[in-house]
Length: 438
Image (cartoon, rainbow, N blue to C red; front, side, top):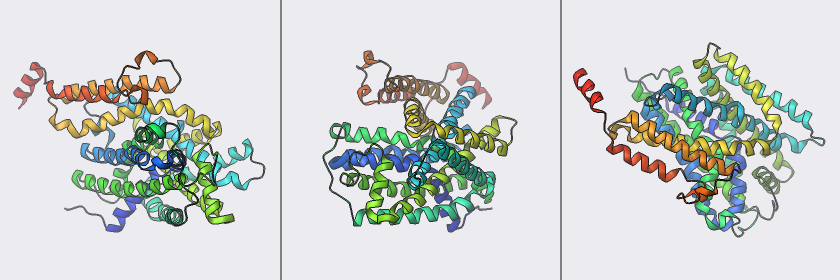
């Protein structure tokens, strides 16, 4: 029996994935990057789009090609190694960094401007309310498409369209000269800035949520699942590109209204107030709250789904555990959370990229198991060196590594190891066993 979805359901699945992606990092990083890039807007934005749109899209396609789950994607790695990588990624996108960040950004940008005396207690109360709401929606796992894809995301997207049109019709200033690294290497700086969205990690894990959602709609065949996964990814990627381009342009034309801003949240807030007057903050609050809430729901749901598969605790118990941890960690503070997360991202992003690249060439590798082990290990070793540098550890002795000075010392060694794997065949004993079995 041919398994198909109605067009409205396909769009809803795509909108759900878009909403999962569009969260705190997607909103706060592009405006400041655009302001700093200035007249180097195009190369900086292109670099950012490569990691913040291109990589997540390719990753979802890789997940679909591999079979739709993390287990399929990492079947050539040792089980323990694959599990450790998955657990680390889920901790990063879940209770440690990305999920609490959604609550922090929602508070800083949507609630705090309306408070005359905003202290730690107000943040604590908001964190509890925000993550309790996210847990409420994540509770009914099978209804995520209907709740997010058909209700919350369309409202969010309308708000973003209004903002984007206003930015392009009535820009609030002229582009200024590029600053810092954006003046000398805008493409690379934009590429590395895209790490902060954490969307490639999200792609590895959100793919499983989409598979579960498709199953609830009766799609169980592997080919049909892969087709609709890719369709959802294309819809989500188009939506993300639209948002990033408008936010980059907003930032590039914000030098007058947001001079001296030290983060993208301030840039966006001041710009929107300049565009829409006293109602600007209200418009921004609705957009930010919905964007952060939908992402928090997706992250809590994805983490709970995975950890329930590893332990005896049920999905709903993990929703309560992870939601509670997120509400607690959210009180650390936004700047501290971002500072802590950057070295971890530099350490694990290359591993995720290596896994995705291997998925596309697996069928041509003579010995996939050896290839996966070697390439992922090489990516991790050199990524840890890059992470050490970002964390402030003196690793200047390794400056001779190609691209090390720009934070991409992992790239050439990983690529070289992957090329070498095309020339390493299976051990003779293994070939003999497989010949006998066939």
